Every structure is written in structure tokens, then in C-alpha cells.
Length: 112
Image 1 (cartoon, rainbow, N blue to C red):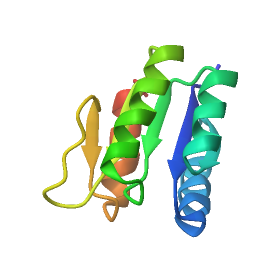
Image 2 (cartoon, rainbow, N blue to C red; image 1 turned 60 degrees about the vertical axis):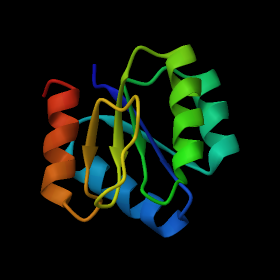
Image 3 (spheres, rainbow, N blue to C red; image 1 turned 135 degrees about the horizontal axis):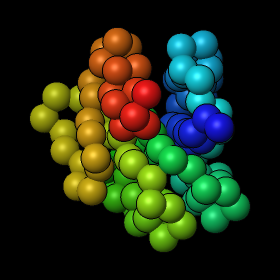
Image 4 (spheres, one colour; image 1 turned 90 degrees about the vertical axis):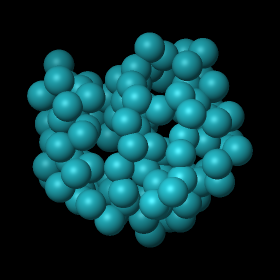
């Protein structure tokens, strides 16, 4: 059975692009959530093996989403961020423009 990924962004076009990329290049199920409220609801409704936090999410919201995810899941967390940004509680971080790095990190976190 494949792992389930929850991808979150505040930018709809980036979210759709990331979903297509993950569906084409991994064997995992991908659920997308646009915005904070939808992401928290998804965390409460389903179990995910990986949470991907897009770089469009403000740092404070990323921290709150990590807390919400940890309440319902023992899965891993990948934060996409720009140079100089940090995300406490994430298992890994990747520059959002590094597509190969994103796919490689997803594989590593999900033990592909």
C-alpha cells in the first residue's frame, strides 16, 4: 500500500503544480489542501504519512499546522522554504525551486 501525502499551500497554482508533480513521479497518494482551515480539517479527517508545507505559508501558520498534524499523525514533515528561513519541528526542508531535491527528499522520508 502506498503512503499518503498531504500537501498544503496558500497559493492555488503552486499547490496544483506540486500535486501533479508528486502524482507523476511518486507512487504515493496525494491530497492537497488550500489554506490553513482546509489543512487542519484534512489532518483531523485522515491519517497521512507525510505533510508537505509550501513556502507560501507564513512561518507562524507552519508552526500551527505542524502542531495540528502531530496531534493526529506520527508521519514525517517536509517544509519548503526560501534561503534563511527555518521551520522548527520539520523532519526536512527543501528549497521550493529544487524539484529533484523535493522528489528525492519525499522518497527518503517515505523510505522509497
